[in-house]
Length: 213
Image 1 (tube, rainbow, N blue to C red):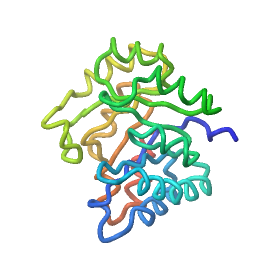
Image 2: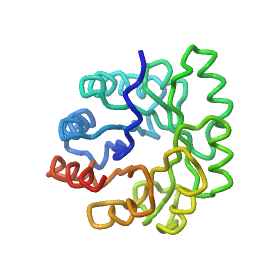
Image 3: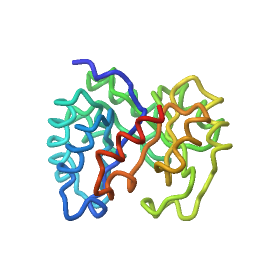
């Protein structure tokens, strides 16, 4: 079955701690009902088995809303759970290797995203078969400790956007107050964690973020 269209206007990335006391499934369900076109399952502490079970639950939800489901880091889980795609970080499997593995598994249509804020690396990722680039942290982030106090700004985001023909999604500290700045770079959308996962009025937040595009 073909995945839904590549709508990356808003990617909601999961975070169990920010979602509390609600479950990830509850927050994702509400976000999807409000119009979220893509979800990325991210859980650095889960075992492969735990992540697989979470992915199956979210796969059912995203299918109901014709939305995309990406799995962070884990190509094996993405393939096993029938997710639409995988998002690879700089220390994960290289894009070309992931593309070859997906093809061997009969998933030539698997969507592959990768993270970089370097135009040259973005161009190489596109040549290697990436479907989109995640670029950040644009405004800094407290949700990804591995990024420290990195803050690349919208100028750098725009440089990455201009360097490739595939979609580029801004990530890092993006919310209602600054998402217009992201849109002005020509980015295809924004990936958010705390802006939605930690929101109480998350339906209003999702609609507000989507209005930008």
